[in-house]
Image: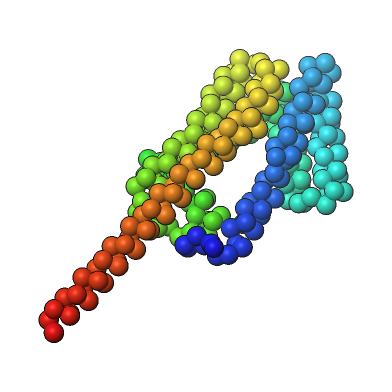
Length: 234
């Protein structure tokens, strides 16, 4: 039996679609490989060879994923993402420029997620309601809003920590450590935040079901009271 407010079969298909768009767990790992290629080559042979090597690795990953008939969008997006980072580094003439896009993107997402908590519109809640097929009735359940706030704050901490640490390393011209931080604060932190989000969603679902049950009981009691009143009048 599906939960109230869901469409049978739809939530799972939406979850699969979301995972496909981001490339799944393998996509997070693949995204680290061009960085692994870029940093040592840059320190040993210079910027241009590092750019060529990073683009070559990204191209191999693209061909590999397409050959395996995986979703094309994350594969293509990953390749172009590496291309943009490489272009920024080339224009700046500095290897550390490769990480500039990721640094400021982290700040952007930290700001968006943080603002959503301040205005009591937690991003995690809206993403969950879209994936699960629920309407926005969860916003009337205080506990659900609170746990979605908490999950959203965790993502704020992830994005903000990435920005603070990597921006500091960028200013200090520590390209090697910058690459290490990019990898260490990439999919591992994402996995932790995803786990917290999963637990928050479970808690919110229980709160929503309890709220819906209480509303149903109240409606039943009101109907019974009204019926008894009519019977007494006769």
